[in-house]
Image 1 (cartoon, rainbow, N blue to C red):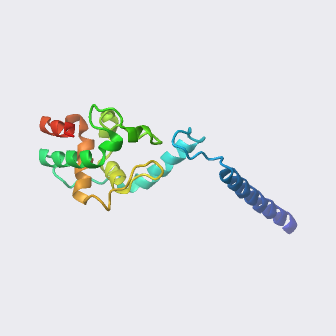
Image 2 (cartoon, rainbow, N blue to C red; image 1 turned 90 degrees about the vertical axis):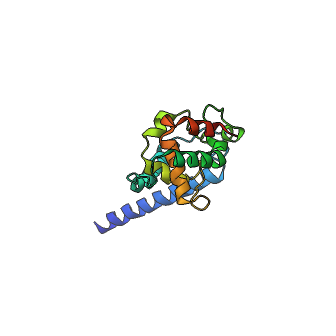
Image 3 (cartoon, one colour; image 1 turned 45 degrees about the horizontal axis):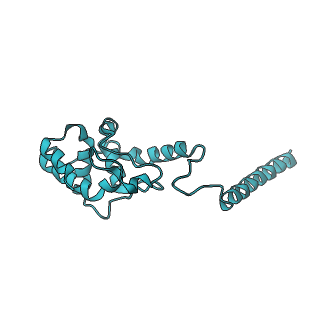
Length: 173
């Protein structure tokens, strides 16, 4: 009986070693395309979504401590214009050359208002603060203040109901 268990363990270890060696050879031989123009690998989107959901989960209940007002929305518009437009475009604007060269494509936030306004504030704040690996989305924790991150979160969360003055500010160069 003990020898059967020993053979089983040896077989399991052999399988793990062969799998790791095969994965190494596949990756080192160029089996994982790194060009932004390459199509995603099988299950790549599924694995990425699963990992992102797990990372964000603890932030979903965060609420914006800033009051919802035109001052904070205008400040969020300034932050967005200075830091986000290059990848996510301005309202009504076409994707930029930078955005066209990224993989995955960065969401054009003001063209996807319904999707963005449905996201919990804590999720958007987490993404702005931490960024998302392997997507080109940088984390702004070290470059924007907590207030600025919440202001741009507010702007995106309420993109479907921006006051005219904030809409005009968004169209400024």
